[in-house]
Length: 403
Ligand SMILES: Cc1cc2nc3c(=O)[nH]c(=O)nc-3n(C[C@H](O)[C@H](O)[C@H](O)COP(=O)(O)OP(=O)(O)OC[C@H]3O[C@@H](n4cnc5c(N)ncnc54)[C@H](O)[C@@H]3O)c2cc1C
Image (cartoon, rainbow, N blue to C red; front, side):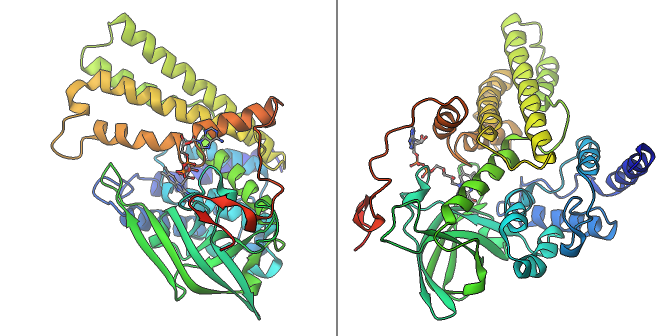
């Protein structure tokens, strides 16, 4: 591949983005279930498929373009200068797709990969349960083998966009006699299968983008198990690493300081930029965003060199959550009462409310600190008294699991 090829490719990306990345219809303001924003993301992705610009580094036989990491980098550089059109696809593309690519059988990849790339199908992640969030290995949803199928019973919670997804990756317990991290398997689940019931959760910002999902005798074909039986924990950990990169690594390449820029502009507009304390706090936010961009660039470079994301992804994820919290406090200082007392759809109030999710989604800040301490810095591990006991003998939440 020559520099001229890459220049041509850059021009193709630019032309495409100028026409399609308009930022239209992607706002979730009056779209509590994010259905319109998802439809816009799907249209954008459909246009990418037609232009031969979708799934850049995935193999052509599975619906990708078979291009190099350098092409992906060029795309991200260009896309970073346009509005984000595909926020609703971040789980489907940032987490489910790399999992399918890495762990799916040839048959699963031929059946599904092109559909996920083109957003004909959108996939969700079903890990968390009541009583199994940070400690997701305590999950109690169970799949029992019955001939050529598995029968699934149980419940998931906080499943983002379950109501608009065609399929999801789910982890369920498949062997109660193994310790809690070992008797888990991962499956591809049809969200429209009989016995799947999806109920919205109402969020503090007025949205209803995530759900409770209940399973009653849901039948999963045996060939929809992904990865080896009872090794779902290994896959779940890999997916969580992809998640932290997707959340903390930034969509675009290069240095970003969008939040600081927004607040600097607003502080100037409101005549507050001469306040030395305000200037200092804005500078801290700016610096934190630059640091997060550098962490994101390092993580993306490792991914593009063919490395699977490791625990270092937690650094970017934690940095993002810290930035969100700093932004919340500072933005309320800049806009004053408008941030807490509003009549309709105040951007500042919505921003402030939604930033709380950053420190929870994809693993809480405390859990990221544990991971960084134990697996990046090599500090002693948190004590774990139950890791070698059969799951059947554990008490999880208020229930004895084997009963
Ligand atoms: C916006 C959003 C979207 C989400 N989307 C999805 C999704 O699509 N799919 C999905 O499966 N899940 C999803 N989640 C769920 C998310 O993964 C969990 O909320 C998260 O892992 C925390 O679990 P929990 O809510 O059960 O809290 P808990 O685990 O009960 O934690 C409660 C508190 O205890 C602390 N804590 C727990 N254990 C430790 C420890 N060992 N050391 C120190 N502190 C600890 C936590 O940090 C936290 O402050 C989403 C969450 C949010 C906010």
